[in-house]
Image (cartoon, rainbow, N blue to C red; front, side, top):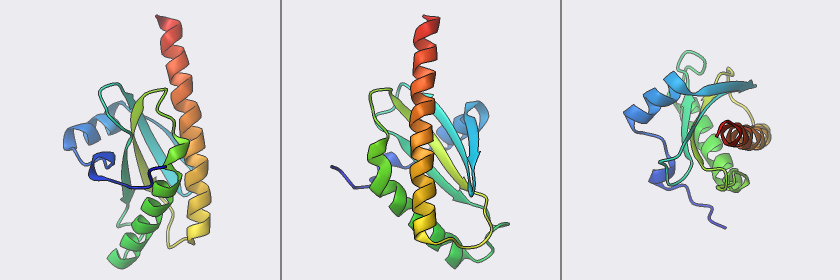
Length: 130
């Protein structure tokens, strides 16, 4: 199993980020707001991790949370299957303050499971329309 988190799995293209925020769907699972958009032209899932300066004041704490979230995603990304296609998604941290890694890891696992079901539901709906 590949546990790497290479550059092509990170969402950093401004055009794709705008598209995700303008056309994407979302759901909320505390402490994250999750935006997602299914794209056919992608070669892998791409993720954006964002933490508001308004919610977490110190840059040291924001960076610490980002590292924890990235690590949790890196270890659990295999739960997103590629059969349904690939997607852009953003994990926006809306909690205030630091969280323990165990709590973040559980939330990221729940998010990935929910995201997988939503992507497969969208795939079934698209096939029904055809």
